[in-house]
Image (cartoon, rainbow, N blue to C red):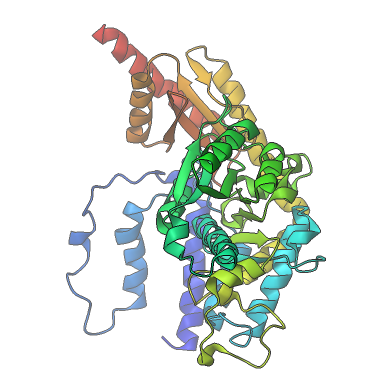
Length: 480
């Protein structure tokens, strides 16, 4: 495909994309296909000669779309949102055209320098302490990771290296293996599975601590666990505090956890993957109070801030600690300006990295802070509208406080009834939900996901849920 063809076919693809998104609500959110559905739809081998663009574009609808889960649909209420916007799409086009691999400043100076500036822009919007910013008084700064999972793992491995270097100063013969056997990390029993996985990869114990009735990890639980482990000869070194859990959007108590981490010299990392975007709104920023105690903070603009996947932003108060853990410096990656600007390959697990800051730059400039705040407030308002609808039906109950854009609810009674409701709602196909479980209760999650979501979509979802619930409860009565 040459440049003229690319321009022509690119316009056709843009038309397809806008038509798809404009009419996405007419499609079933969850595909009705079985594993292996695609095998008979395309040849067993790649073609020897080129296919036509027209045939490829036709096959997008024929082959791909039947198996697509439509995350941007106003009928999709599962998981948490995955951000989408035209400015971000256009930035990705430019990113792909530039095609740089920005592992050092020298490999693409603009890639590094725009990221430095965008991390400060975002940090200022979140009102992070100046100690997290490149422009701040210390050694703070931020870096774009692929996912929150990578950010958690990065910080855990950095903390592990930091503790190893401290112990080696006391005893030069001390080995990493000897230290790993003693290290203990902590998180709440509501933390994301990626936190436990980081412990597995880092080969350290990860203790899940019990949360309160709201799903929040509190200071006394952490203090008790640390003292207990110290008495056994273990070394507490890392705590993951979650701001906006996947299960129920609960918030660990940062103002209680932070001073305990400081008292015991433990690295506190804050995982705000979903909820972090909301902190650009003054009314939600208090949810992050206590961040000043953290060594690191992470959230995903690719969830709720119009920046498309992948884009997970991580800030640390001392960037040296990232470089200590990952600094490998072969001759072919050195350059004469080293140390003047960050070489972000030292701040992440992979060597290569995309020009992801373009997406942040385009979105922040073409929306502005106020428009982004309006989008977040709209989703929170819709969540409370759905909460109010649930409360009108005494067959249902709300199982967690509605703080942001997530509503957790269930049919009263045994878990089996709500499990049947979820299965039948998804089999029905008009909307898509996923479940969760906390404090011995199974419940359904309804998350505000689609960027075009409006009040009528919330009413529609509630009508579907009531309709299916009628069948579930009538069937249960008939069996009795």
